[in-house]
Structure formats: C-alpha cells, structure tokens
Image (tube, rainbow, N blue to C red; front, side, top):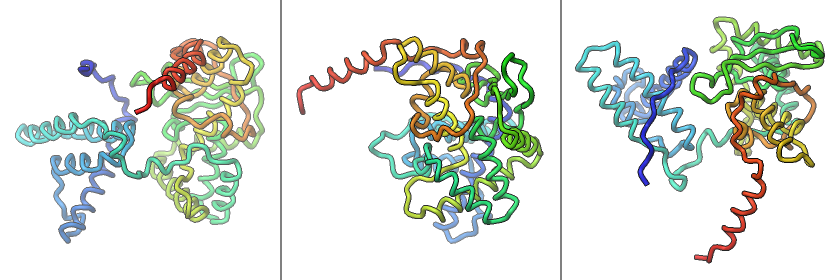
Amino acid sequence: MSEPKATPSPPQSLRTKKDYARRCRQLAAAAQRELAKATGQRADTIDLTPSMLVSFVIGKKGDYLANSWRVVRSAVISTLEQTAALVDEPVAKEIKTAIERLKQEKPAPEGEKKPVTSRTKDKSPAANDLVRIEHAALARQTQSAIELVRYFKASLPTGLRPCEWPRARFGESTRDGYRWMLVVENAKATNGRAHGPVRTLHWEELALDVVEDILTWITIAQDGDYDRRLNTIGHQLWEITRALWPRRKEWPTLYSARHVAIAGWKAFYVRKGQGPAERLEALAVVAALSGHGSDDTASKHYARANAASGKSPVPTADPAEVQNVRRVIKLDWLESLREAKAKKEARPPG
C-alpha cells in the first residue's frame, strides 16, 4: 500500500522552535563527544558539519520509539532549515541535502529498537515514591532542591507541561460556584494536537498552600532564567531518583507530575457503571483538562487511572472547551474490542 501524500506542516510556535533548537544543540554536543572519543580530540575542537550531525542522528535512530524519533528528526530539521536561511548558497545547498536525507528516515521497526532513555521514564509513580522524592530533596537543603518540591506541588493538581507555566494565569474563577481558575496556553495548539489555543481549569476550592504553590511556580516560570532553573531541577530529580532506586529500570521525571494528574482525573471522571455516552463525555472532560485535541490521547499515552493517589483536588473543565474535543473513541468501543479479540482467537495457528 502506498503512503498517503504528505500534508503541509502546521506553523511552529516560537516556543517549539526554541525547544527544537535546544534539543538540536544537545544532539550536536553528543555527536562532538562521540567523535572526540573516536579520534582522541577534545570535543570542543570538533568542527561538526550538518552532514556529520545528520549521520550521527540517523545512527541513533534505533534508540528511539516512533514518537520520540519524530521529535528528534523534527528538531534537527527545523534548526538546520533556520541555519540554511542565514548562510551563503553553497553552504545552504549542503545543509538542504542533509535535511532531505534526514527527512527520508522513518522510525526504526520495533524489533530493531534498543533499551533507551525514553523508556526509563516512570509515567505512573506511586504516591509513596513522590513522598520519598520530596523528603530526599528537602534533605539536600539547596535552593534548586526546594524548587523541585515546589514544582511537583504546583504540577500535581494542575497537570501542566513544564513549558506551559510561563504563560499560565491563575486567580479567582469567573464561573459561578467555583473559587479558583487556571488559564493555560496549550503547548500543542499550533500543530493541531490541542482542542484550542487555551484550556481552563476551575476548582470549587483549593487549600491555601496549593494556591501559594501555584502562584509561586508561575512567578518562577516567568523569570527570564526559567529554562536554566528547569534544567537544574530536572538534574536534581535525576540524581535523587537514581540514589533512591539504583536498581530500577524506570524513574520519575518532571513530566511524571502531568501523568499522575491526568491519571487522577481519569479515576475521578471515568467510573464503572457508566453508559457509553457518559463515558465518552467523561473522556472528553479529561481531554479538555489536559489540553488534548481528541478523547483518546489520555487513554493511549498517559498513566492508568489506578496509578493516581486521589489526593489532589480535581478541577472542572470549561463546557465550551469540552465541546471542542474531537470524539474519536466509538460508543461501541467495548463491542469492537470483543469482535477484534474473537477474530484474533479464530485465526489458525502458525
């Protein structure tokens, strides 16, 4: 079967371009280190060409899951395209040749994949794990460790992506019957993966310490040094989790807070005994709270509902935003699963 024709890519936000550039710099630094090790040179003396970078990235393709590979590929392509626009034509031609070579690289088949960093992320850490991380961080008595604790305390009830905090707005709710409101610019809105440009979370009530944690983290995020501080607390978390659980194969990351939050919302809204229509509405609410464009994203890619501790207060979504969620899951999804299972079991062995 021939592949469908490529459609024009949606415009990238400034934040996405910045994230891509940072990821590309990390890959370039890794390529320089690898070349330095192979040649006996110092990494900072390696003159890395676009072609060399692309060859390095392609060589690492088997380390990535399909989604991770697409992000890596897009990061390098985006950054090289910007570079090509700033240099002379002969150099730009060389860069464009490297870009085209990278564009042809599809994700590696599942059987060719090796153990990778993206597979060491614990998407559903236990509540006790988060408590142990907090205690270990506070025991360090450093500013960055304290900020790590503050990050988790602000992110667990809100489910924000780390990059969404700088433009978040928190205050009194404009909706009757609710006390607090958080308005978030959806990070995925520019590529069609969100239900709209913003999402709104309403709470009937929040403890004052939670309010303080959210407001404090927004203030930190709006500091011009936020990227560096985010990297610092991420490194703190890396050190703490490896020290606490050296034999594990998966460890919590900063993004785990979002996974735990969404798991809590699924546990609250999606319950046993619901009819198909009720369940679809519940999934749409979870999608709206999460900033997802469709109702199946949280079901496929986020922590299970039973991974949630149930301790964080659950927000309510804006009804208009719920209506904007694409309904992908079928009402008769359970029956479809049964039919698919029956067909699979009916196949002759071999």
